[in-house]
Image (cartoon, rainbow, N blue to C red; front, side):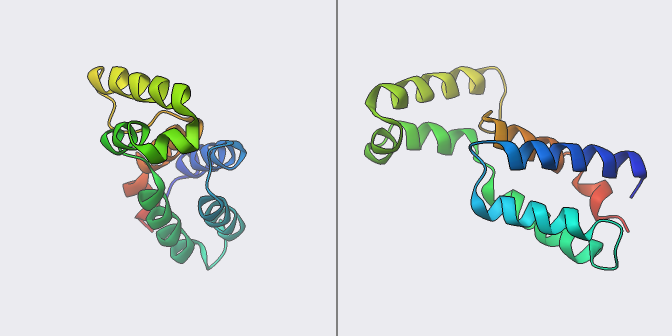
Length: 120
């Protein structure tokens, strides 16, 4: 993997880790990957990191369904859940495939480099 790709993914990984919406599992996987960059553990940690990111990113239809559910209303609050659902429908209409919260946006950017990351 090229230095440019690594630098980009390191930057996006730090954005992910600093996002309030980042799960603890993604944060742990991100830190493990950062710690492994440039070591003999890099390839193995890259695979684990990609798997975690793919599991964590929220597809837009799932976000809409959750925001419109009773559970979504409990998590977000009723008014915020309605706003989240409306926003999600708006970005879906504009072509979004995933949630655009800071964590999901960083994950989407990292996953765009997946093929380059896995070439080693």
